[in-house]
Length: 335
Image 1 (cartoon, one colour):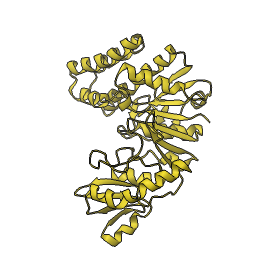
Image 2 (cartoon, helix red, strand yellow; image 1 turned 90 degrees about the vertical axis):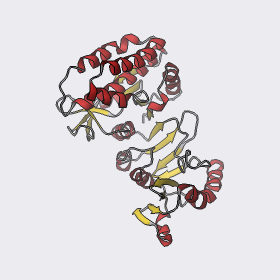
Image 3 (cartoon, one colour; image 1 turned 135 degrees about the vertical axis):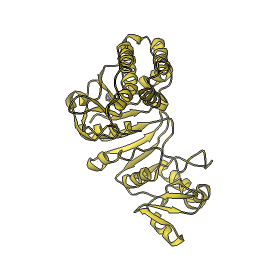
Image 4 (cartoon, helix red, strand yellow; image 1 turned 180 degrees about the horizontal axis):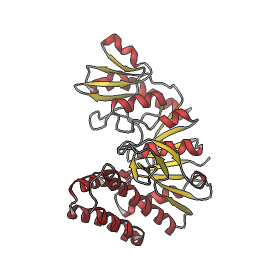
C-alpha cells in the first residue's frame, strides 16, 4: 500500500529545504502521501496575527513565504492565499477564527511543495484539509477522510496539509499543536498504509534530550504503548494522539531524518528495559518495559511502562539506559 510521509516544519525554512523535500519524495519507489507542516515558526506568528491583527506581522508572514516561493519560481501559486490572509484581518473574532488563521501555515507550505514537485516533473496532486472533523476548534477530532481513493492513488504523490481539517460547515479546524503527526497516522490508517514515516531534523527518538544529556543516542526500536506513555510524559517527538490510529490499524511508525535509519515504533516489545529519560520537575520520567520495577527504588508509576523517579535525567540515563543501549544497537544493526 501507499506509504505516508510527514515532512516536519523544522525541515521547511528555505527554498533549498523545499527542493530537498521534493528530492526525498522522488526517491520513493511508490509515490507516497506527503503530509506537510507549516514553515518553522509560522503557526505561532499566525496565532499572534489573529490576536493582534497587526499589518506589520502580516507583512512579515507574507515576505517569509514570498521569499521562498520567488526563488522557486512558484510565487503565483500562493499569491491568492496571501491575499485571502490579508482579507482575514478584517474578520471579527469568533470561536473558529484562530483555527482559520492557523490553517494558512500548512496551506501555504503544502502548496509550495506541491508546486515544486510539479516543476521537477514529479506527478503530484494537492489536497487541502481533506479530513472532515467535528467543531472542537483547537483540538478537533477527525471523523472522515474525504477524497480517500484519490489520496490512495498509487500513480501520483498526494501532497496533503497536516494539522488542519474542516468541520461540517466547511470551517477550518486544527487537531492541536504538533498535529501533523496525528494527521499522518490518521491518513495512514484510513488508506491502509503499512508504515508512516515522521521526518524531522532529529535522527530519531532520542534516549534523552541531547541538550541535557550529551551522550543521548537514537533509540532503534520502541513499542506503540511505550511511545504513547512517552507522549503523555511530555516527549517532544509526539503529539499525544499520534498513536491512536496506529493501535487501530496494522501499521508501524518510523521517526527519522532524511539520512538516518531512525526509530521504528510498532506492535513489538523489544529491549532495552529502559528506553527514554524525560525531565519531570527536579527528577525524571523513565519509559520502558521494566519501568514499573523502579517502584522498588521509590519511583511513582505513571503508567504500565512509565515511572517518575527523584533522579536527574543525566544520572538516570547513565545508570538505567546507557549500560544497555550500545549492546542492543550493535545487535539490531548486525542481525
